[in-house]
Length: 159
Image (cartoon, rainbow, N blue to C red; front, side, top):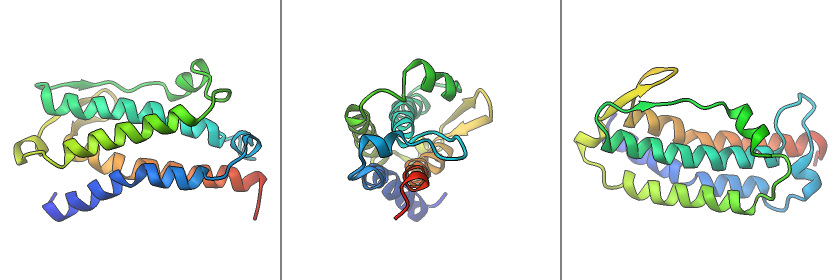
């Protein structure tokens, strides 16, 4: 991956929290809890998923940079949603967690050396997993879920 591509992805990554905030802006509890017709997650559940995912991804990146040959474990997103009660918790702290994880991680991304960009470990489900792979995935992640939040809100509350 060249420097320009990295800079674009880092900028997109850093913009992820704003995208999520825009998607939830003005949402009522009723809108946050509306179950889309396809039985997908509610907007509230998506926000909590993002918070847990962002904290997990932040640690994954740090492990890729620091550890020799780290094993990056997958986790059961549905179990997290169920056991951590995504459907009943307020979203404020989760939005704060997304922001903090993104801000601190973007600071790290801004100072990585070429050697650090080339580091990799093994993901328990997908095999080789490097810093650049991580960036490709998480640069898009919050934006994709922001769109999912908009769809969940629109499913029950069309404009």
